[in-house]
Image 1 (cartoon, rainbow, N blue to C red):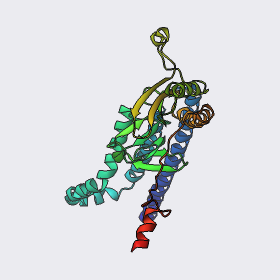
Image 2: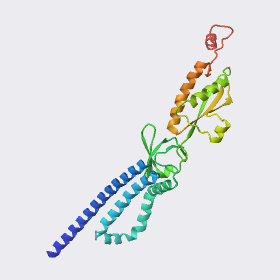
Image 3: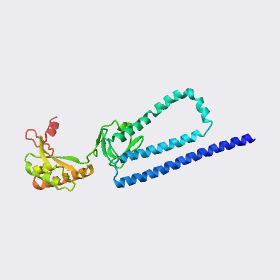
Image 4: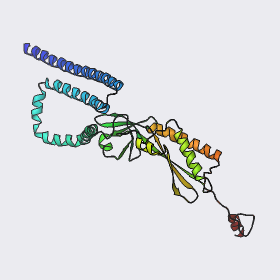
Length: 297
């Protein structure tokens, strides 16, 4: 009777120890998560860089805390040790099975580590992928990268997939961006006047960025360059180089400038050609060719 009571007390102690360890693990993970988020908020306010690394570490800390806590909880259960000894013979098969099952997950984690180390993109970068996905990097976790597209939807991509993609990063080392403004004018329009209008409208836009070097300014290089790009079948194609401080400004500037140039062209008599179709008549008939052929049949 006394031995049974001692055994029950021992099992009860083990049970409470497991509950305490798991509770402490959960509470500790929450506290560390809260403190780390406060640290990240202060870092953003101070303008500290490497936010991507800090966000990645946030996920890694939580995983480590839970793994350590669960390991301690398992270690206090005595009967798990003999059970572990009894399955040593199947350890090799289990290791292979776990390896295959975790291959993709481990690949994502390793890819995430390389992304954080090499920094092809970081939090808040605007990227475009070779498969057409575009947006702003919102988070980089152990397994995946979260991208917020321009419709405010979240695209979740495994790190092993995005690390093998060809990316266009608008914020990589330099945020300045050049937008090419291409407009065709008719052969009868004044080319010099059209180039002047395009340069003035871009230069006068508040979001236009002066990308000239001091040497360019000293040489008298124009702030906005406009050139004849191509002599097409029905139009003379003009191209203007419009610089902006970043991608959002470039998009707004491009939309505004296209509208203002169109209005100036109409006022100044510059014609923008558009496709036209000439209908021929058969033998001077008032009927179109198609109708005449149908009548003859």
